[in-house]
Length: 221
Image 1 (cartoon, rainbow, N blue to C red):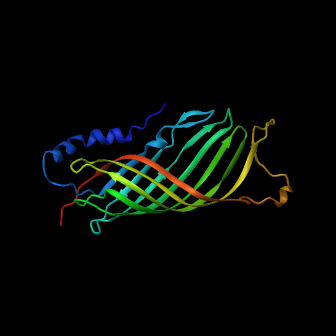
Image 2: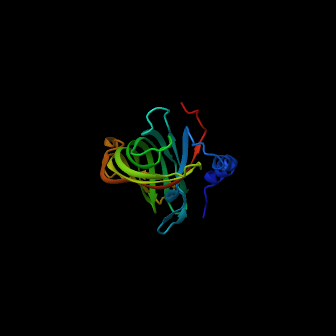
Image 3: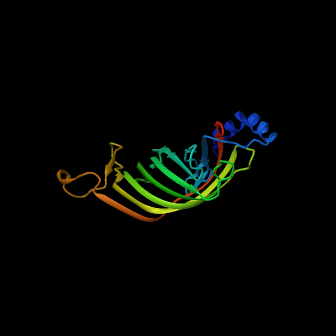
């Protein structure tokens, strides 16, 4: 089992500042939130075992409009197991905006609505068969952020539904002397064009339970 040390390191770095804020009545006025999806940090894949999907989420809090924030998510799992022909190679970037209903003390917390768009590429393989391509998507969701008044740590959770559109090509392992992977195509090789398969997905696109920390402070206006 592999654990992500990023959040633990941030907690240690800012432990002193958390304690100092707890001893005063001054509210926090953070600038940036950094979090990671715990459900992705340790993931169980049947017949594969425990693995990890590295991910980081950044949330920017504008100084005006305390109901709103904007953010960026990045995921980059890069499993490569040539001995079993199993792969999970994904680069995905998501940009999003949130609308909080009841922000308090200039902290974005409580219930919020979420709108997002994502794009990425992927190469996914399983025991000699695989798929590689690119995808884009749009999603709408709802979430809840719990943040103590005088501490920088927060817990963020939510779910989103949306549309995902992908162009891809299936591939297979040849099991020949070359040890190469080939596109799974039985037609005339001269007529082959890449990304000739399409996937349209309408349904759940994001589920997260994250722990994060607010960074920096701005002066109250």
